[in-house]
Image 1 (cartoon, rainbow, N blue to C red):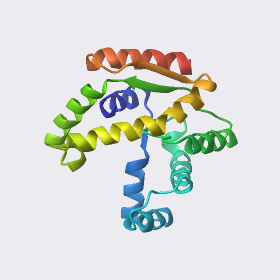
Image 2: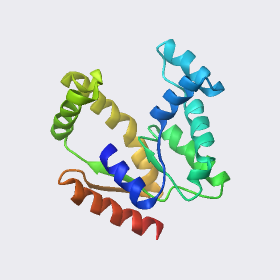
Image 3: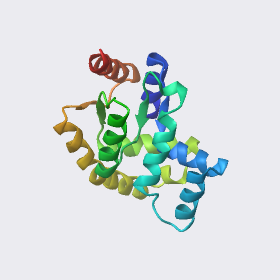
Length: 179
């Protein structure tokens, strides 16, 4: 998804918004939200939906988001999706499309193990951890998918094939969604 996100942001001239990156940056910068998030993370907890939504709210208010943006790995829960919809509605806008890349578990494991060889991320080096992440992802994101299916905004495309084939499919869907 990271590879495709880079292509999409280049083609459409929009920023990629990753809540994980934003959390790390807020903690590093010592912002009020970063300080709140750090307390939770240091205690071994999960950062609340409220903190995540406030980070997103601050980020999409920045000038580079005026003509759109690409969320990467967000929203992850139905509560985040509902809060995001409310936030965007208050700004008189909405999600144009939610696109899932359909990739088999075996292919994802292979890709992440390969990424683990160069990324330095220990969670990409252990197959058992990868498989657990996959199961958690499926459990958490199923309600998000259902939420956006009800709104007629959720679509799935094959996430296996060449990078160019996948990008072409994504670009076509995005063009149709924003056109």
